[in-house]
Image (cartoon, rainbow, N blue to C red):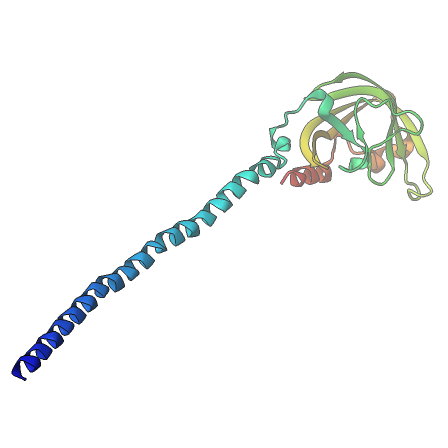
Length: 213
């Protein structure tokens, strides 16, 4: 009987030792699981950084439109062919280059009281333009609507060009006109009624300077 009890106790002891051994062998497996999950974090951070490269490539793709911004106006230089009389002293009016001014003529004033007609140009450079023709002037007596238009033979010199930026184009416009009358002015255009000479187009000059920012 003692032998049976002792064998039973030894068997229980063996079972407990085996159980402890199996429990110990499962513990490392459980501890390696977090390590495996930790390795999955690295790919996540790499993929998170990959979108950052997207805007960079997008930025390089958008570079051509940026370089397409109009910079030509600032780089333009004056030539004789890019220098004009502004019709009616209006930047958005006709740009007149060596105009013949046939018909009624080329409008000089904004109020339609002064014109050039039948012009022939002896010089047109970046500094000045010199031409001979007819100066048509409204006497504005008793008022401009009822005034008489007198024609005076004249040599006119345009000078003081100023740069203007209009409709993505760069031009230069004369801002001063000096007149040499080849015959005496009519009596209606003498004294206080004499036309301004030289004539400075100050409003045109200001508009031109503002147009280029």
